[in-house]
Length: 274
Image (cartoon, rainbow, N blue to C red):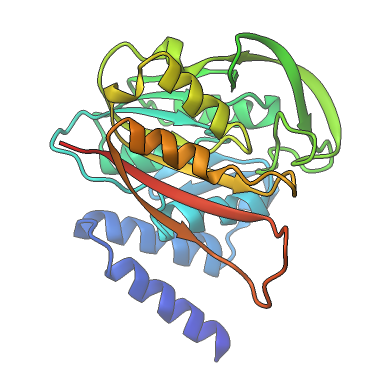
């Protein structure tokens, strides 16, 4: 009975979205046949996600990404063009890229992902689905161009907690190439997705310093609160947004009872004011 209620709630959630009927059907079919009926994708790490063939690293991360992106619609946005220019920072295996292509097949996407395992899946997922106008960069984003340490878990390939910050992923490390996002923005961007496990403040500050924020129409920033338990810096990002003519909405979830220094994911949905 509990599983039935969960399925019914998910079906109702899909039905209540603003997506057109065709997209709703594709998401529903994926949910039912890939995740509820437990297809055999585990054997070859290949799944069908809304008609796309998707290579992935682990079943748990695939399910989490599908729930977050396709069911919760965390990266949904409206635009007045059929060919939006999207920058996807922290693409992992590319589920967000596929979501954007499902909504806007003619979109142009620049995607960043530094991890070797995740980037390998991302690259295959773009190629085997013949996705056009997608440029991939195997780089982390930060406040500098160069080489920096990247922390990952060799026992959990493609982990969603991989980071350039040790406290976020206190496991193994390797050197990776880092870049400043500001160097890639030369014209108006319709949508920026920023989910980079703790480096978001540095990237937003770099965009402010280089005067690139006025070129961005809308963005979603996942702020990782209390990676360092003593660091409370949400106001820095919000202050930059306010100073550069952005409005915003904030979404956050907390478990009860409340405890000091709890880690928390906070979603910031920002939009350039007219």
